[in-house]
Image (cartoon, rainbow over all chains, first blue to last red; front, top):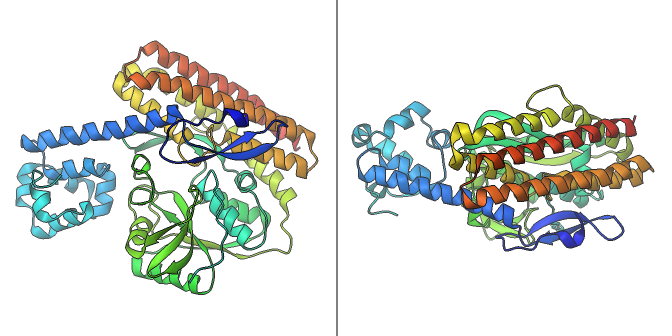
Length: 130
Length: 332
């Protein structure tokens, strides 16, 4: 890439690029952003927002527990959530089931609440939360 | 306390940390040099691992490898520690700062408060330097940021003990032992040799074969996963290639810069020529990203376009295959 081809689109962070100057020597220069990357990032964020919105609807319909909603809200998957909360994946999956969720001990609820940085009250009732 | 530490912005976090720590100790080693000697360049499709609900693809070696190999090859020693107890991890950090020793830390990105929101995913292989502590806040030199910044004790603990794939476990590292003079020449040859070896390795998911393997997957995605998921996966490839820290073109430009610097240092004209070819290959990766973005921009695309983009990857694989064969010859 030539120095004057370094993209200067609208991004959220200033990146350092390696490019060649007029004599063909490598130099570094900052870029304010590049659209193809920006679109990929935006799509990834949008994808997560969609997943979160879907999870929310399922919680309100009683198909899943708020834990799944908060997991999506925090951009996690089951593997990441399980390592944060310290439960096996199968237990996390079980906690997604409203039937099990309502029976969970306060101690375990507190663990999830701490990971998501919300109160147990907010964890139990997403309408009070976000 | 504050250690007099010069912040340098770099493209990639790990090279940047190593390069700044070396400069602090009085050795002027550039970022591309660290990257090249540490054999940082790669292409690998990582099977079974899903990151952010899409397959994991990487354009560089595993976190930590660059520094380890660089250290071994130029003859410096590194001290590395991981912790199960966060309090112990913080004490060790404070001890080092008291001894006026800036250190590198591996951290997770998700809770890194100074990062913009669209970069904050559960990615645990970021690196930064801590160079002091003032009024309960740590002074941070993050190589990918333009300016230095700070994190509170709580904020830093959180990112040091992020969980998930490549969990940092409080990983702290710094160089301890230096030779009188760095033997860059021999180290460069070793670094190049290994990169050629891995890029040409007869393993289906690694190097040139890995690019072709991924291209084949890209072809199948729209039919197998549906266009929406295929777009998401394709976007992930571009993010891995262009996200912060690659210097553009999936590290290919940094590598070209390394070859140019090495060519001058070793008075090897072939390396200078190959540096130009690597720049051209970097441009091809950029074109690939640009064309890929035209597909996922609308989030609805024809399956044909996935074929075209896969063909583009195959072409890059052909160019890189010839390139690494020539590179191996150039230093033989």
